[in-house]
Amino acid sequence: MLKFIKASAVCAVLGITALAGAPAQADALYIGAGGHGGLRVMVRDNHGPRWHGNRHYRPVRACSPERALERARRMGVRRAHVAYQNRSVIGVRGHDRRGRITLTFGRYANCPLIR
Image 1 (tube, rainbow, N blue to C red):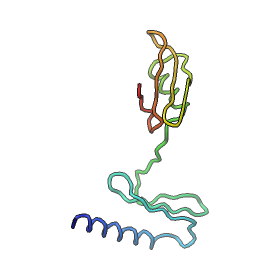
Image 2: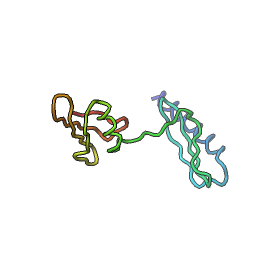
Image 3: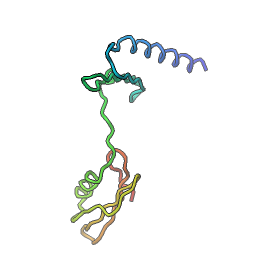
Image 4: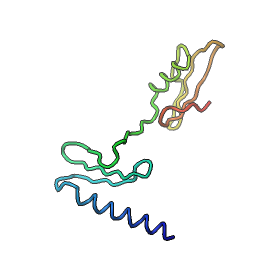
């Protein structure tokens, strides 16, 4: 319990110090937890968003049909095309050295192969 209180106090202090450094003309201010225990503060003003605090920030891009096709082609699928898609998966059909093949990719970062 004491560990939780200490962590909450540290987060509160960091949040208050981040608010003190925000510019007066900012349209929006977002404070959140970054990866690997870091703190991420975004200040959005007329010049666009700027990220502070986590230098290794990289936005996570979900899998698109084009990225799924490219991944299937790199896996050796010829004449690949998107057969079906919904909000959670993308299905790609084509041919490999054994014949017809259907691959299903998840709509997450890096297009994970489901089956």
